[in-house]
Length: 139
Image 1 (tube, one colour):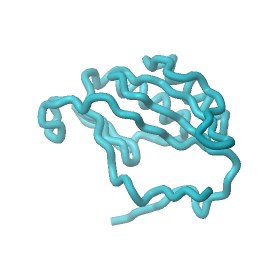
Image 2 (tube, helix red, strand yellow):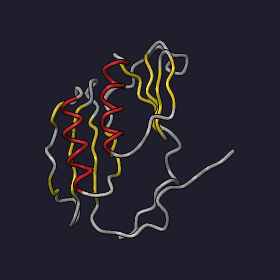
Image 3 (cartoon, rainbow, N blue to C red):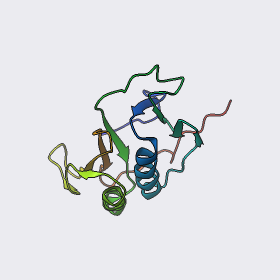
Image 4 (cartoon, helix red, strand yellow):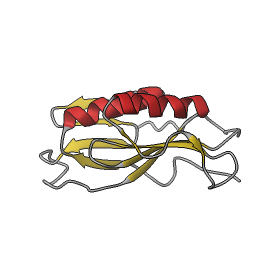
């Protein structure tokens, strides 16, 4: 199996009810995944391709986005476990403890509901080699 990353999604915006609760949750799980916040503002924050804002932000047009499923890449099983643990400690709700899933051999994942009910996953696909650790885009 060969997977490619960095060529389909430019960015994802989640429009949420409680910025403080969402920021606390996402800062914790992203830290466990070694992804820093890229920036914050009065009514938003972002990290890599994920942009999270309030309904009152200019980009949201006053509407919540509804329920979504986002799967974050993890480097190993320990990173999936850490994601799950800190997510629960920071407002997430269990939606599937860390463990093997039947999607393909080696698929190890955990699922949490964020403060708005979005299904947030961390997944490790098993031992694999990557051509690069990330794609760097400069403007």
